[in-house]
Image 1 (tube, rainbow, N blue to C red):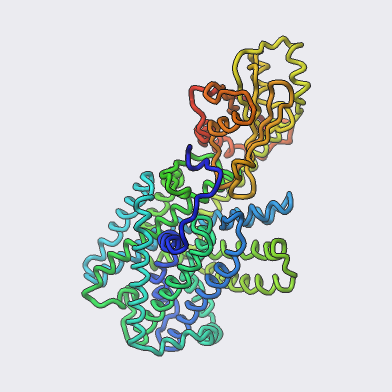
Image 2 (image 1 turned 135 degrees about the vertical axis):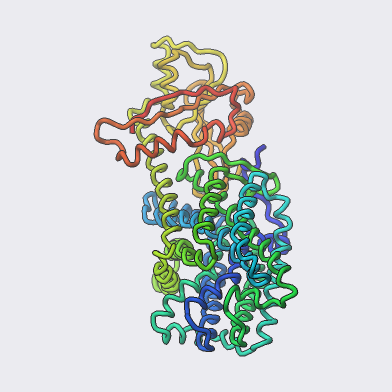
Length: 625
């Protein structure tokens, strides 16, 4: 059986093993931010006096505490959708509370769309910042930084179709080495100027914000770069569980980040030059080249994590009906998250390499970085407030106070990042806007098709009663019709009988439902009703983290006293051709036209559901929407 069609979540490994695995998947983005964050903030402050350095390091440390430790590890990860996390899972969880919640849907979808912008920028800025260490080893090599970045990015995306199962085993230990190295370098830097430890006091951060004029507000946009991977803690919760992620964060990742940022601040206080990459100035000169190699590997792992996350989110969106069907390949039976989505991969590659070539330096890309993630975090906070009220049943005062604190912090970061809009910040917003438009158009289109085909429904008993009157021939065998109409005759079956004047002796009308929960157990999947003799209405429910497999489903149906031979079925699949509606009740042209393009170019239903090609009859129909 295709792993993607399994009925239950993959069994999570032991706590320690999962914690090590989480290092390579969850913390790649946030773990490589010290390569560019402090340098970016220092360039924005325009000075390196003790007041500024202590204030900036304090802001970095307390941002990590408030946003990552408190908001995500302390609160968000306690709200899960059957073990799954992330903004789409949270949207689906809250969406089932009431039938129509457009604000929640809009917040969740736009937050998800913004993550694609982050996914395009992260590989470019991470690999560029790592390779810029070559400028310290040999300044003459600076002309090779950009070409090497493009080569590494090309190789990274080109290897995606092979899957990452084997490489993934090494990700955790390598990232563990990376975090330990950062911690050691940080301690080495702190030893050169221990007074930097005063930055642990939040007073210095607040004092800098309040007494630095407008500079303090602008600096927040750079400070935010230290938590750009925090959303991954929540989004990847389903792969490892909340316990292992919290364990890895509290015991290794968070201490290493704090020590490294403090170490970078310490060497600047001690008089180290601030030109170039400050991160590499923590390292003794003979070890700089090995550190650059390790940094490059770490940024590749961080990029891989972002790409894998984009694949997983795309699958969720497809299952929830918010994205066109795309070809999803399961690259390994070792993990449900090991998938490959070709369309997403190649589009991300083009955008990522385009960003690297367009911005050329990590400092320039930092201006475009942060808006997408800060906006996503703001959306998550809004949904968390609703979850506190409706899931935890907290009163308005407590929910408002806690969510209000997070909202003020997130809104401050978002507002500061918006000041970078004209310096490249428009890039992730444009990307997110395009993704959101695709989601909106697709959902409106498939909803319009369902509504159109559902007009003038024909009751099943009335339809079969009329077969004899119309002298419709009943031929041997079993026909399977996919339908959205649970209580009435499938439109595709009506069309087929009308034009062929024949129908199989046994008929199954199958409706595939996607639930708001990630997984539906096999025992709870099927509802089978024999409505009239030899006609069965079947509803198969799947979670949004599961992918239906129609042949496997037929084999399961055959075990429920339904006399079918799964190997000798004929599947009838409706292939809709979209035309504009002429009665004035159709979709606007700006939705209908692009939806038609998406529908023509999305993956075939038969491929998506793994239906054998020699058992399929495509029914082409013209539908006006």
